Length: 392
Image 1 (spheres, helix red, strand yellow):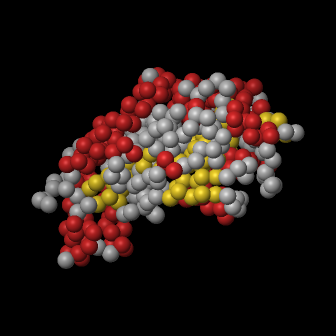
Image 2 (spheres, one colour; image 1 turned 90 degrees about the vertical axis):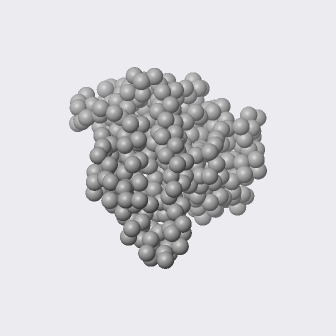
Image 3 (spheres, helix red, strand yellow; image 1 turned 180 degrees about the vertical axis):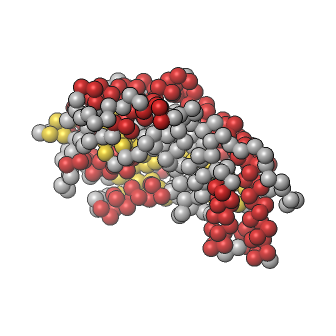
């Protein structure tokens, strides 16, 4: 590789973290000026804002009118575990894992809930298991988009419309960036700090009528913590899905999410959000297709994530390095770009192959992605000069 000069232009917003993600373009703290701080979330003003958040979420995402939408504690993790602890155990389970979050749900099912009738479908980072082997007459637990693996489910064609089981989908880095087939999904979860760049600690839980029926007719054999309970006397606690949250939400975080939803509406809703994210993937992939040192972790184009875009180093010398040196080289790229104020928090997930992970969600401007790419070449050139001799 010939010597590469330091690029002149820098991204206007260097925040490419995969969670919490970049704020929407133009965001300032002034967006929070109408927050009812110091007020109860159960006061009329609090309830009104929480209900408004639910209604705008339904509208932007096109969630069916008979699906319930709730705001729940503990981010996406809390929402997924709330669903699994409350719904699983009624029938056999097919659990899918191709990255760290899916692995976590498999662990919960097999080690915590200890459900013996569980089939596990695993695949390495950057690939999907064979979805055709999944039995949707069993309950199915899966991530739509692998935030740490850069791989997404291409569509919902593999899910039967007349399924007997429930589909429980962790969609935290997919919603607002990918088209979700709601008729194929019975439970969908996500967190505010992902695709719309909201603040942390809160999760969203969407239930289909079939999921509600399961809640009202099935009682798990294990005890449920109060924070997981969605029924009382065999009936759904309706207030949870009207903004009457189980525990106290941050009204600052609520105001911030409302601001993000209003921005989404202003640019054209879900179609525009998806287009922005896909444009970011296109920019990165066009660069990768010409790169002599970097490649997408996902070989198959149809399953490449447009949000968590994961890259590996394909340069021949890199493969000859020890695992520790590979990790150190990738970290050096991340450190260089951080120091230059060009890109923050773009290291690959700790359990994923050594490389980079650039967030391409809808709040990221494609112009910033395009400005970042030459900097990746520059940083790699510095790292190559330092680490290539070790591979000799």
